[in-house]
Length: 167
Image (cartoon, rainbow, N blue to C red; front, side):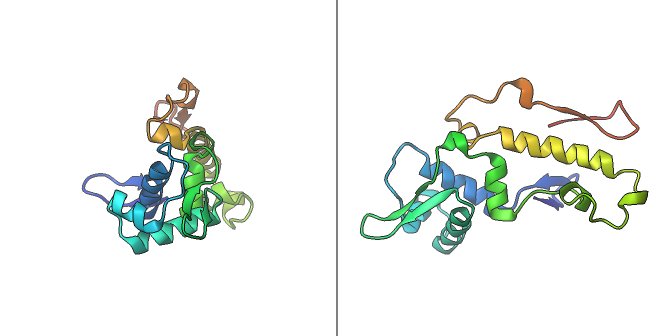
């Protein structure tokens, strides 16, 4: 996940490849258990074959899809869409999400002993990470109802308790 500049305010955004990964996983989860080739997926999604192949390799490395060789080969989901989280998808394509160094690797930042904001960023990181883990591919693509309101978290930021972020 990267911080990108868009028209308007700064925002957290997933990369285009992660967006493509979600589109491809949605195609693979549409009820057909038959493996699909990269070419067939490219045709259905209008994503270039080279990009589809690259993303599928990342998803396979991340354990989200499996490939089968041969005349009836192709790619298929490695587990049900309900068992693949948004965090799994992002991790497979981009690596683990981290807002700050101390959020993903506590104790490895030289500034941590004197830092006054690290703990707050670690809390924000845990809330975002938890939400990404709570949302399944099936929910992302509308095949399952959204998780119960427990996934809606209010995170108090630092010394300003009135400032809250809905995640």
